[in-house]
Image (cartoon, rainbow, N blue to C red):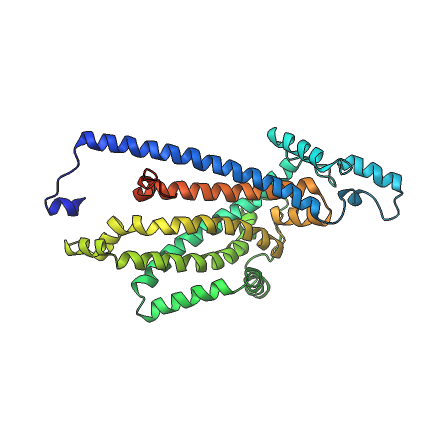
Length: 349
């Protein structure tokens, strides 16, 4: 805006600005309604897919309740207890009706509420995911911008090479390497486990999550750095940034004033995907460090054919991934007016 004022362009008249603002609000409302409907439709499809695919797996959940020498009468009684003797549509109807009440069911093996179990496990998985993603995003923005600015020097080359290497290395291997260095050799941090009292012992809980968080950070930062570098390169070479610099602004000032918003548009989309990937990756890392999160709950439930627990973990994970994607799409349209105005011309969103 300052640049255009310097070359003598006038501002938009207030009455036209109000009309334009109302039009954009209407477009955003339409988009939110359509996108919310798509979110509900996708979530419903995922709900059906989780239920059907789980029933296609071999084995009966009643087998987890009886021994190998159980009589046919005992097996039939166990099937009635878990409801596996009912037709699929009846089982799905009962599960769907309980979901409408906010009830994920009761574990076949432990007899505990799946809601309570997931809530206690999320107290480990969610802080791990958010901490790892937040640190990764900050590091990736800094490293990506430095790599773009210094792309013709050895600094940019080293950052790009390390980012590529970080993507290629398996996350569980990094976890085991960190355990070997910081837990086995240096004895600085615990190798595995989580305090029995949970977050009531905050210091030990934080120490238990340091190595798992660092493991995810190394992998996520490598992936995000590549995309932030690419976005920064597009902006640094853009004509509008060169024009701003020709008016007397420094490279850093022009980047902050004009380039940051443009560069953040593709990064937001990738960051949404990466946050969902970080959440899924945290489930894997929990197994390496023996953390009592959603990962261990899902693994145990699969081994015991505990359908309510499996369905609950998968449903919560899928819902979080869908909501993250929804939030990333909406945030993109809030930042980029081109995506909002494209809706009025019938463009794809």
